[in-house]
Length: 144
Image (cartoon, rainbow, N blue to C red):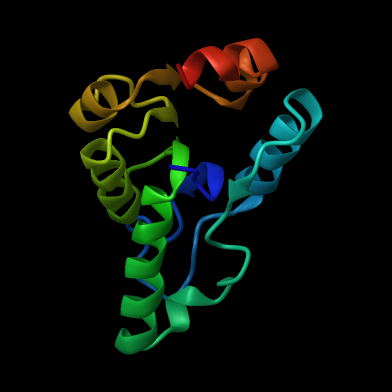
C-alpha cells in the first residue's frame, strides 16, 4: 500500500503550558530543511502548517483536527517525534504509529523515558545529532 507521506512530523506544541500559548515551533522548519537539504524528495507532513492557532480551537474543531492527524500518522511510512519536553499529543501519535508498525525517530534529551525508549527505532539527543545522521543511505536503512 502506498503511503501519502514519508514522515509525519510530530512534536511538542502546547506541552504542559496551561495558557493558550505554545512552545516555539521553529524546530519544524529546521527539521524539514535538514531533510530537504540532505535527503531531497521526502514527503513530510507537518500538522502545524495548516493549524497555527490550534490552541484557540473549540472542542469540535480540535477533535476533527486531532483525530484527522492520527489518520495521517497511519498514512505515513515513518514518524519523527521532536520532544525536548513531554507531550501528550505526540505520545498518542507515537502509540498510533506503534500500532500500525510505523517506525519512529525521536529527537529528545529524555532518552531514559520509557515511551521514547520502547517506541523509537532511533533516538537522537538533539537536532545536531539528527542532522549528522540524515542521509539518503541512513533514511533508506531506517525504512527497511
